[in-house]
Image (cartoon, rainbow, N blue to C red):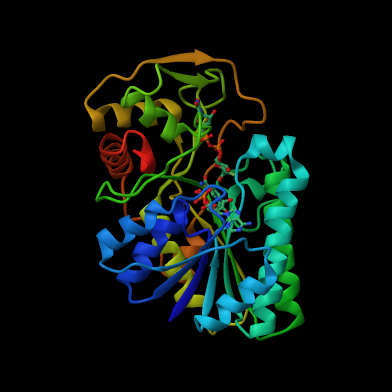
Length: 337
Ligand code: NAD
Ligand code: UFG
């Protein structure tokens, strides 16, 4: 099967391409490179022995997307392309809605024209409303608090409406919890631009000496150690979740929604300690005030994905840290080194 992977030059998309190739699929990457790296193509080839076709294009370029769907005889689409920085989305809402919502609309319309009817979409746990009622399951109340989160929820609703309008569509939204880790080869991983917003890449840059110390945002949350609790999922498990979703959804019409998470909550201090063990250092850190907009704790109920897709996480916290350290220490400056 030929799979169009939008955003396939990014962190999760590129590693999913490796897993797609290993499973016998042929990924075709379309990426604007707004946050992706062409160097991933060399790394995918190094790991899998196959170099995916790469098209540098914006998913909002309808004519180009139609052409790619036709030329490469695409059977299904995994749609990773999107902007993902929560804080930036608050400052630049129009840019976020245009890229994430309009981009998805153009893609769906191009698919309709060509008759490609299977779409797997990168959604996020950020669509859920703030609640103390854990774990979050697919029926938990929705209430995204940022333009980024709302853009994901808008697209999910569009997928539902399109699936309802025409029974030949198969639309799947995967709500990721907190993706971390790297390919175990150490050749591919997360390569954020500038100062990382997210915990794991920040810790990794402290470990490699690029940042002096981790600032822990908040120590007085109502959690066992007072720091924020999240559901971290190894990016390899996340990639495998896409393959499971693709196998399930292709040829099965309707609108499907699944959490992809581990079901386990871990604190900032848990993550710091585990990473310290993986890299053999005590990592410098200091406590700082809470970060605006952060929730105390949330984690997934991943039971639906296990029941329906036959998927659940396989990789441990230790693997998340060891693989990130392997990637970061081999590529201290990321793909540009
Ligand atoms: P990433 O930024 O590494 O990858 C996204 C890729 O999409 C980049 O290569 C970028 O160049 C490309 N892109 C963006 N807009 C595009 C457009 N209009 N046309 C073509 N290409 C475009 O991010 P990631 O962490 O790999 O995330 C992938 C997807 O998963 C995103 O949709 C993101 O919102 C979603 N997601 C990520 C997380 C996370 O914590 N990483 C959590 C939940 C959901
Ligand atoms: N944290 C720190 N110091 C840092 C960075 C983070 O203490 O330098 C803490 C945060 O306060 C939070 C935890 O580490 O308690 C995790 O923070 P991240 O920024 O790594 O992750 P978030 O849960 O805030 O958000 C991430 C993605 C969102 C996505 C969400 C749910 O950034 O896009 O997971 O999927 F929506």
